[in-house]
Length: 406
View (tube, helix red, strand yellow):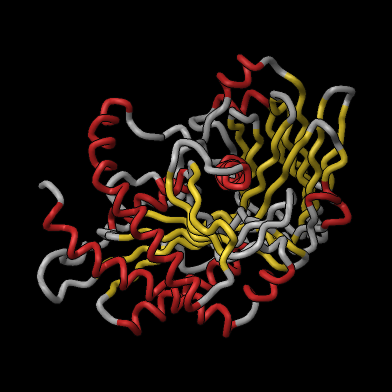
């Protein structure tokens, strides 16, 4: 077998803290020959068996410490994180599509570790490849100094395409609604058996778009049209670039604590209104961390006062939107949670100038909700409820607008 390997010096002293190899094509993972296990006392060894060599790179991110492995491109079918990991020094592991044509694996480390060695063995006869990465403990200071995502247009997410904003004035102006199907790509969201939240939210987002368009007077933009990863900050950026007047994020989570069921509508609040909301906000933002993106680009402190002023106008409009949605969904769709209107610090709702809500259309952890989520007739009724709620709110909001101080 031939071998291509890179030591620590190559990983960290190149123009960007990663590495790539010159192969091409779709590689399939061999789940039975892949593992993450303890190595050399305090270290960790990652071994991935691939049907062929593909370009790859690796780098680390901090807070929490993570190792990120990018590939072009890997079919992860058959790989299970639970069976892959055999080390208490490794926490959650996620893998999947990053952007079309590129795959990503993110390994959360229990403590800071540095890459000692990364080697790709190639079988000259079959073309099969074996990637081995060795990690060893380092201090938190050393890890933080070396951590950071590389910047390379061949691998990175493209900048959002600027879309023309629709006219916001005039009697015939459409209302621009941005629908945000939660999760996607490397981030599957909640999983119950073979059912993934990312697939349910995308299916419902497409159906909701059709329901809104059939109602007329609305332009609809989806933050993702297929199974791809979109960062939380990018979702908000897409809403701004589309000239959104309403932002709706769709989810169908699972909660192991207690019996959560029925649809809920969340609005932004610095503090959660209940334990369940707090856990959902933590889960959604945690998924972003595991997908290899730092959420450090929060509100600029310099502009906080301007954002607060914008929120003074947007907050009551958002509250009214949430109430209208809850009432219409209760009448047309349902069932609703016994406390359908809730508040939590969801990062995806932080656009200061756009009324934004997050709708949990159901909980996959509830057998009743999961059955509904997979029922096209039920989803159609729920989509009509959301459409009716938007129409009701739009009329009320238009009547209130002249009373708002300009």
